[in-house]
Length: 255
Length: 359
Image 1: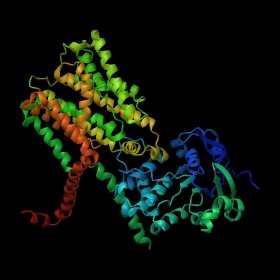
Image 2: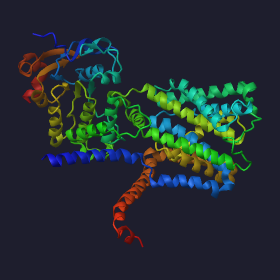
Image 3: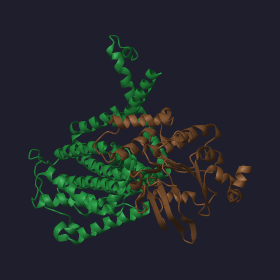
């Protein structure tokens, strides 16, 4: 069924990660189609975050390959992968506590434009950077806190900044690691709206515990169990799969 | 619909620019600080010797602030660059290789930078403890080499027989240290302005990002290696210039310039004034040197005791509270700026309401 032009946006081949005797990822061969809304689910300790860390270059795999648009990026550093178009958010906020949202977003944009090493210029003097910061603040509803230090922002705003910051890298592939984790129910819809509003041409890999989010958002689901790819398919197929129900979904869906 | 939309985003854009430029603008307090420093050239002629010392400490601590306050690299060996600068300036003058002081000072800075560049690769990775030990070790090595190479450095006797030419061929160094002070202060000011510009740039911002969260910094595409090498080299250049200034203003240099005491005191000066806001080293140097003078005049034996106590208190009180005494000053500075901004519009009108408010 695959046409010649459909090189997957992101692909792993027999990816493996061992920590001493523990196998955190075992022979994971994952293929994420361009423009997909692909969800990665699995019980705690299934190796989801390990996989994301390998995809983004935080962890070096013990074996296997990672391909971005058909290009082998296994050996590249984290920051080099960002330049090639892969960005991520973190399950636990990883932000710059002392910077404001404006400065934080400005950093990512300047970096992308290659002006991040300019050492004799006042930041924010380039209209294209300022306009882009403005657009991001509006899109992710951060304009009202733009002058605050990130450390003092409400948790929900910090989660939005997490996504905005990854998005500021203009990724072709965006990895969202539990974007709504820990967000109070009242602020949840803001995060979900932001995720749902991501442009269609951006390929999204969503790591998520919350089955409501997964089934509203994803057009394809991979289930990871014990570091291994267990089942893959459309949301319907995965929901119907008896093995998935047995191992994982049973408890959370029927609850 | 469209009208208000456009104006909102225009407003947003200008608020963003304003946030960036507000940081770059010189606050009235800063201007006051430098005017006060400048005034001491004429108002405190009897204190120029100690003031010159303060300027040199300030420059060394400023240099340390560049790596500690902005890139999170802690060092207990900053005297290595200081001493290399000091000996470079001494040797250049003694052997009349470069006799004009400003030029010689640039060479001292370059010598510090060259050594900083080479050793920067040792501090790129690792914990604070690793960095402390590596920088300490490098400084000990350099000091011992200088001690052994007595044919070049004069060894334990120090480098003697340094004669200084006039600055720019115009200003002769005098016994009272007037020229030395004015010269040092100008050098400090110029290097401060450059440092201020650099830490406020996109490059400076990215250093703070690396310091604040290296994991996220690389996740937004910021490569760390060359930025850390860059700032470490720059800091080493500054330290080299500071060392060069000490030699030039005292016509002497010794192993003291490379000593552990100097590294440790530089850190102390910076901690007293607070890291990460450039003025920390400057304020710390004033407090440190005058405190040293006063305490040692009162109780000559116990200088170390008081400075030790002071250090313990500062560290126990903690970084947050040190930051919190900086915060009110910043707020005051902001308020002064606000006041100026508020004053401007009324000034257009013939009757300025601002005038009435002041008795």
